[in-house]
Every structure is written in structure tokens, then in C-alpha cells.
Length: 519
View (cartoon, rainbow, N blue to C red):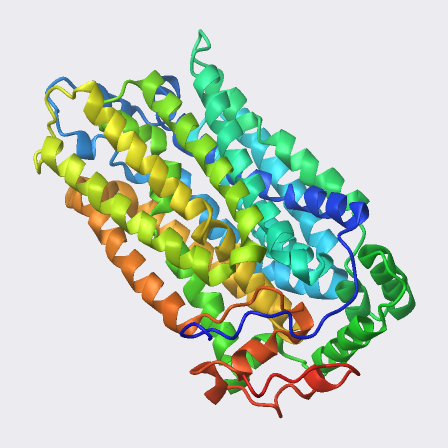
């Protein structure tokens, strides 16, 4: 019995292949591309709560934070320049992800990863040695350009390289490395903030060179995906690579499907314009709505500003950084749960369970903050049990995100696009993600100042909307080969009106293919 909006869970067409040590190591190295994004998310929030950093670059914020006459905790970090420091990266990532589409399609996924690492490395150097605000912001822009290239290419690389039965787990390696990056950044911030002389923030920002080197070197040693090699006319090499990746010699069915998909993609001269065709309506909808909803879970509010947020609700500077480390550990652990369960329980189950968990926690945190801070923002004395309750529910919220919208927000879009629009559609996915990350980051401190505890209820509303969307409109994609993914749209109660057999004849082309029209 299919769930609403789903198809019966079953493998459908099967390609032979194993999870070889070669492909496992390859996917682990590629997934390290997420480190640069995660490290930046963790570092930027921690650095902006360090007094020496604020005193040097944002003295107005520093004065407001320490003004004895101001007890309004909601508004102490409200500064346009500070917000621009944090969010300028996401505008740059938006621009570079669009350019990355052409590089990824014409020159392969590896070159985009290389560009990502080199640009991020340059930004890290500039930020580590920054003497003025303009150097910080130019450095952030370079970091953003690097993140745009990496986020566009790494999820595609992982989805194409992984055997379809393990695609979910291997692709979520990208999200796992994001969470590991956040955790490492939080731990480093905690210790660097204690350095006497107040220059620890330089080590935090400059430390971004390490994950940049990892993805740069990784991109030079990784093999190309068979899909990308076929797309560039290297058929013999692609077949050899496919045999090595799958660990078997019988790859004829999968190879012929990849070639058929590539030949269809060669007929597409304008992939961006093609995205507007009726048959791509479900793909375009997912490429826009999934990253939009991912940002409106409110997770970046928690992760960017976890130290600021905990400082705001009454923790000291040290304690707030330590609390951010705790949420970082939860984030990593819960992502491991997702890696274990995504190919067993399916994408829809994790989306819906995580959404319910986040909703409950957001309501509890909003009520807890409202009870103590009210609308004045003056909490008076905060008992220890209160702080523990807030951190506990924020951790449960982070866990809910980390095994649902966190990894699946990258996995599902990267696995549903046909080859002919894959690079362009993935660029839209990253661009929408960065646009709304920018908007949320740009507006968060002002929203906290004006909406107060209502900010958590604002994001809770979106969690309800996105869960309804997933329930009715996202089909289950586990155990479906990536080049056969179109059948999930053809059998869906709503999307089937946009997609029909004539649009994707190659799905039934190869011998042994099982049509699923009778679902």
C-alpha cells in the first residue's frame, strides 16, 4: 500500500554491483567537500561572540554588548555591518554556483571541486590576516565563491558514483562532513577564545585553510564519475571506470542507460531554458522548494548564532561556546543515524519524523524564552535548570534536523535530476539555498530584536508547511537507480499529469527493464 504521494517501496530495476572499498574511499574523500561549508558555519558564529574580534572590527556592537544600562538581551548583536560580515559569503556562493554549472557539465565534477578548494583557501588566508573590515568581507566573498563550487559539484559526484542501493548513505557523507566541520569549528573557537592577547580569532578564521587543502588535494586524486566521462565523450574509459566502481564486469544494462541518458542530454542546447519545460515541473519544484524549506527550518539561526544565542539567554562567553560544542556533537551523532536509516526507512519517513520533532522543540523553546525574557528582553536571574532545559530542547531540535532536512535537503535534489538538466538544476538548488541562507542570516539579528521569542514560532509555522508538502508531493526515491528516477514522477498522483511515457522513452529502452505503470 503506497503512502500518500509515494510509490510502493521496491527496487524496481536492478543493476548488478557491490559497495567496493574503492567507491567507499572515493565517496569519503569527495564528501570532505562539506568540511569547508560546515567549518565556516561554526566559525563565523563563534568568532562574532569573541570580545577581541568585536572590539577590533565592530566596536559599536562591543559597546552595546557591554553597556551596563542595556538589559535587552534580544538586541545586543543587532548590527548591519556584523550581519554583512556573516551573510556576504552566501551572495558570493549564489553567484559562483551558477557559474559552477557550466564548469561541472563541460569539464567534469572534479574541476568544480578544485576551484572550490582554491578559492576557499584564498579567503581563509585573507581573513586570518585581516586588519580592516573590508579585508574580512572580501575574504568572506572568496570563501563564498569556493562554497558555491563545492556545494554544486560534491552532491552530484556522490550521487553518480554510489551504487543506487547505498546512494543515500554515501551521499549523506557530504552532510556528515558539514556537521563535523561545524563541530571542529566550535571546539576550536572554545579553545582559541582562551588565548591571552586576544588574537585567537585569527587562528579560528585562518584555520579554514585546512579543510580547503583537503578538498583541493582530494579533487586532484579522485577519479571522474562514469556519468561525467560519458557526458564528455569518453565512452571506453567510462565503461572501464564503471566496472571498477561497481566491482563487477556485467555493467551493460547500467552503461547503456547512462549512454542513452547522455545522448538525450546532448540534444539539449540550453539546459537552463529547458528547465522550464512542462516535463521538468516536478524537478524544478523540488530544486526550489526543498532548499527554501531547508533554510526556513530555522537551523542556520541555531548553528550560525548558537554561541550568540546561548550568550543572549544568559550563558557567559565560555559557557555559550561550550553549549555550541554540545549541539555540534548532537549534530554529528544524528547525521550518523541518517546514514544508517536513509536506505532502510526511506527519505519520506525521515523528513516527516524530523519535521514533527523540530516543531515540538521550537514551540517549547519559544515558550521557555517567553516565560523568562518576556517582551522586554530582561531575564533577571536565570536558574541553572532553565538554561539546561533550553539547551536540551535545542539539542533535540538539532537532532531532528540532522537526520532529516539537513542531509536530505542535499541528497534528494541531487538524485532526482535527469542528466540533461542535472548541472543546471543542481545550481538552482544551491542558488536557492544560498539566497535564503543570505536572507535569513541578513534578517536574523533584526528579527530576534523585533520578534523576540516569536522568531521560533515563525520558523515553527514553516516546519508545518514543509511537512505537509513532503507528505503530499515528495515520492519515495530510495532504491531507485539514478537514471531510472523518472518513473517516480510518472506514477505519482500529482506529478504524473506533467510527466508521461513519451517524455522519457529511454527508461524502458534497455533489456530487462521493468515498467512500473501498474503501480
